Length: 79
Image 1 (cartoon, rainbow, N blue to C red):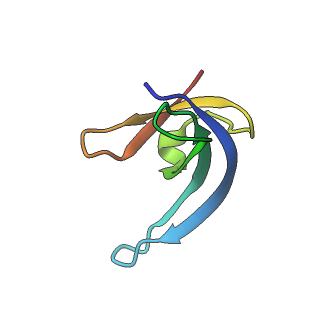
Image 2: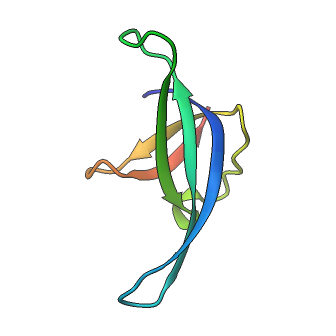
């Protein structure tokens, strides 16, 4: 399980064109270290508020994204 440090996040709100349903969530910007990278690696992923649950993101916190079988973030584990 890869550890990530939250560097920032941005809330989003989109409307599904077909259904008119409004989806809200957050795009998370993270950094991590890797032996194959000189410096720091960066990654970005989005997660809906439904899947985020009760996790309250803060800059600097350590997290581990939980991926589903399709490679999409399905949850976040706080470390």
